[in-house]
Amino acid sequence: EIAQSIPDMSNEKFQALSTEQREHLCDAVATRNVVHTTNQILARSSIIRCAVEEGRIKVVGALYDVKSGKIEFLERDQVPLAADMQIV
Image 1 (cartoon, rainbow, N blue to C red):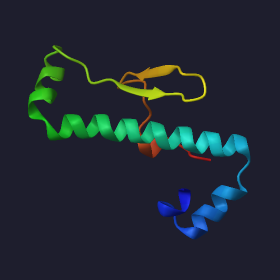
Image 2: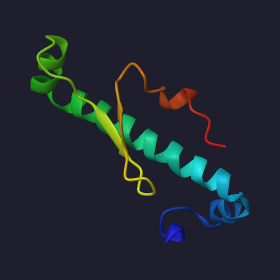
Image 3: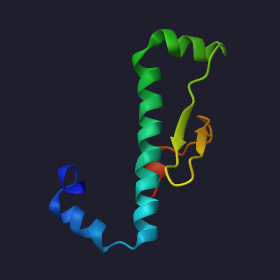
């Protein structure tokens, strides 16, 4: 249920969006979550960060589309910064 995590005023705005706008918003939120998570992995683990810097491993985020069953892998240089993303 969306009301648990989004204040009532925001929930009303969300409900007023078209289906296409809702899907776009959900995709943007999911992408931000992947970006945040990959950034946190690198920020919190010096071992992983060092291995990435040395080119031994990559931290690659992924988005799973529940409608199509497809997975989109996001390279770090392809992912927009959260500040650059427009939700609606």
